[in-house]
Length: 452
Image (cartoon, rainbow, N blue to C red; front, side, top):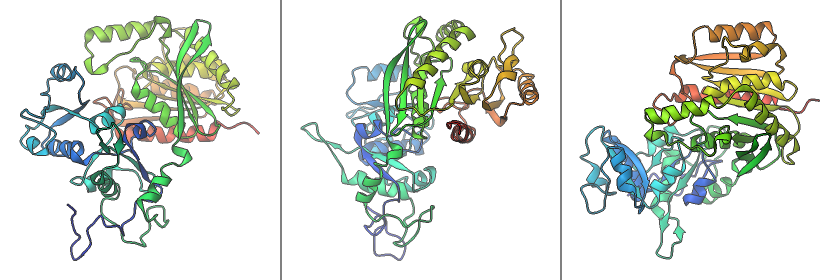
């Protein structure tokens, strides 16, 4: 069904109301894998997205899970959530979710929508349908840049075909209140007039990235590394892990840096310990102890050796432009990107660190002591409430960087806590995190250019 505007004889999703200029959509799981960003919207009108909206409007929390996997019940039990089942009390039918209790946790298996939601990892992704169109539209970025993924319909032969309700939902969710023909979008340009135009536009080169898992030789063997790179050669950035290590959330960060035009390496700094992967949704004291032991296995010399190998790899890479490199460090790696900026001053042009620890210590190898050799520009973002960053750290950093003539910017974000950059955490602050992204990408654009 479609709603009609007051006084109008045409439905709100009529053909006269165009798809957003510069936007578009992709179909299914493969489309989602090629387009991971906080601005995506997943549309599976019948019935995942609608079920999510109904349950969320009742105050429930939905945990998406792929349909048909044997361990779904165990997944639900571990999270204190009833599993939905077609013949049970709850199901994908929105009607069964109208009476769920406020605060309920519900595992919602589905063939398409749940799989797409899980594929986005920790990146917040709206589930769009006809019910919540206006709210989703307000949550998306400007119309000229938002791109969605529609679930489609699985056929008996295993093929995936567009579903008309998802296409209608995509148009509605992407635009919210409809525009008339001849209206201009926020960029001041005339909108394109068809879904086909949106499809063509979603193939724009700036959204296309290449990614692969590689091994980079180093003195300690080889560093398993996730590499994300833009379609065209550009500058390069090394993203160092935080304490929980490699996970999809950090891969999403690397992809976002690549979409901004920079080749990005995400190395597994714990490679000397084997392959460590942590499911943070199951974190307890014992997992925290293991994470702490992994952190303790690193020191400045080891990380410096790995950093040199990564820099050498970038210098030899045929699709990486010459020029200074960028470094990004979160939490435990704040100290390591600052140390690398001191040690590799002639190779590092920009450094960003967020809620970094260990940057000022009483030890002889404290990174701040080498500030006089730094040639890079620094952007440091801190939480206002962070017990891991002593009160003297930020003033000390500001003082030593200023006295050393290092170009820098330090921001302390009000009402934030340690880890505010990570969308998967309860302490996530979208406002502060996006401000950090904006400053960091601006820094890279200005400083990672070949001299001359």
